Every structure is written in structure tokens, then in C-alpha cells.
Image (tube, rainbow over all chains, first blue to last red; front, top):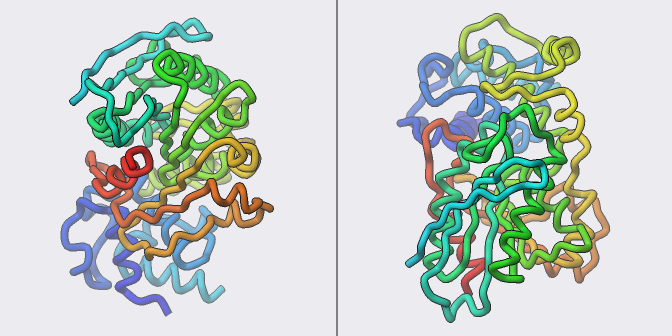
Amino acid sequence: MVELEQVLDVLAESLDGAAQIHQMSEEAPLLGAIPELDSMAIVGIITSIEERFGIVFDDDELDAEVFETVGTLRNQIVAKMEN
Amino acid sequence: MHTTDFHYLPSSQNSQIFIAHYAPLEQSEAVGASQAVIFVPPFAEEMNRSKRMYVLCARLLADAGIHSLCFDFSGTGDSSGEWGDFDYADWKNNLIDVFQFAKKITSNISLVTLRDSALISLNLIKRADIQIDKCVLWDPIDNGDALIRQLVRMKIASAMASDLKKITTKEVLESIEQSGFLEVGGYYVSADLIDQIKVEKISDSIEDVLALTEMHWMTTGKSNSNSAVIPICLSKLNLTDVMLKKLTMHTVNDVKFWMQQEVTISPLLLRETKQVFVS
């Protein structure tokens, strides 16, 4: 099980300047809504997720839909862990 | 207190290497014998994001009595030349040139690295004619292949973040093959440079390095636990007790400043680094 708080921890680590990460809900939008979420931050988040959850993403599994909301990112992690 | 001098050092590649020398005004008892620390820049965008922290750390150490040197590799920052005119071999030679510059100040020389600059630095340390006292690695990348994978992912993420058509790893790799370079964040990384970086591995140098040099491996992250464990890339090696005594793992509960879009400072990382040099 991947807790919402665990996903928010990863986001907070890569988006230090972004306000209120830990107040975010599953529906909170990511791409396009957080100015700090640039390409390096996205790569940082992916790498942190891989290290923390012991999974490895195939780069082709990663697209804008994964980073649409906190919930879609969490679902991708869950799906990867179940495979 | 310290003074700051700027130098343009002629390099062995006929370029001018920019060096900022932060020199202590007086010898410190806490530092003991004269020391110099060279700050080795990381690659591309991480280089830009390291500048502020490197200068702050250099000033902090200089105020504590340590000569601190920040420099730019040829073709980057304030050094002469164009980015595409130099490769990894040139930058390794740049570091040797800066080492020789530091040697005129003192024979007690240490390095601070960030991310991939650990690879270049360890390569230098294992040379027989180079003696490095301490090496502080900030969030090191342990192999060049991981750095290239990060660059390819940045290309994909960049398209993702700017609402462009989705691109795949395969398409990025095909594009490198066709054009001869990978463009990430305005940096054109040639296929030759990619090949040079890919073969670099910390595990290839670490045993030689730990025979000679005290190493401090610092991992940052606000959600880190406090337990400092040996990284996987090192745990697979047969490091002797003598080598392990020279390796200190540090877990620093501070922001990964190099990952942030805005200029960000990691005060705990600065403090931890200072403690390595000032007892």
C-alpha cells in the first residue's frame, strides 16, 4: 500500500519552494499547476520514487497523465509495485 | 575573514580556466596546517544550480582558515571556450591544472564534489602523482550511465512539462544517433561525450581512492532517516576494514538544493561539510 503522505513526502523533497505540498489531496493538480515542477524536478521525483519504493520505471511508462494529479502519480506507483 | 582573488589559469588545452580563490586572512588553530579545498563543478544544469552553494561553502571554509578554490571547466561559466569544444578528457585535465595551481598554495589539498563531479574527481585521485587529503561527495552519482539516463529522462520530462507531444526513450536515442548529439536544457551533449561519460564508475576507482584518501559521502534529503548506510554500489565491493575506516557516510536532513528550480541553500549541508575540515 502506498500512503498519500509517502507520495507527498517525495514531492516535498523535490519541490522545496512549492507551498503547501503536505496539504494536498489526491485530486490536487501537479503539471501546469506548480511552477516549480520543471523537467529536473520531474526527474528528481521519478528517481526518488524508484529509490524509496524499490521500483524501476520504464521511461516510456512516464507521460503527462502520470503527473496530472497527486492521485494519478500515486496510482502509477501502486500499479508498478503490483507488477 | 577572507579575501577573494580571481585568476585565469592557462590550461593544457590552450584555454583559460577561471578560478576564484577565497583566501583566509589568517591561519586558524582549529584548521591546523595550511589546507586548500577545490570545489569541482557538476555537469550542465546541475553546474548552474551548484554555483551559489559552492561559493557559500568556499567563503565559509575561507573564514575558518582554509584556502578555497571555485573554478569553471573549459567552455563553461567564466572559463574561455565554447561548451561543445571540450570533452570529458579535457575536463579531467582541467582538474589536474587546478590541482597544480592549488599545490602552489599548500600540499594539503581536498575536494568537494556534487553529483557526477565525483566521477571525474575519483579518477584524479587514483593517479599516482596526485595526493588528495579528503574528498567530500555531495549526493554523488555513482556511474556515468545513470547521468546519461537522467539527461534522457529530462528530455522526456521537458516535453511532458511543456505540453509537447510525448516522446519516448527510443525516439531520443534514435535522435542522438541521427544528429550526433542530445540537447537538454540548452546544452548540446555530443554522442562522443555521452560515450565517454557512460563508462565512468565510482566502483572502478573507489578501492584505489580509499587506500589514499579520506572520503565523506553525504546524502541529503529532508525525509531521510538518520541511519547512514553504505550505498549499494559500494556494498557489492570487497572493501577492507582499512578502506572502510576511511569512508564516512553522512545523512544530512536538508533540501536537495541542486534539484530546485530557484536558488536554494542547504545550511545543514554547509555545516556538515565545514565540520569535515575544521575540527
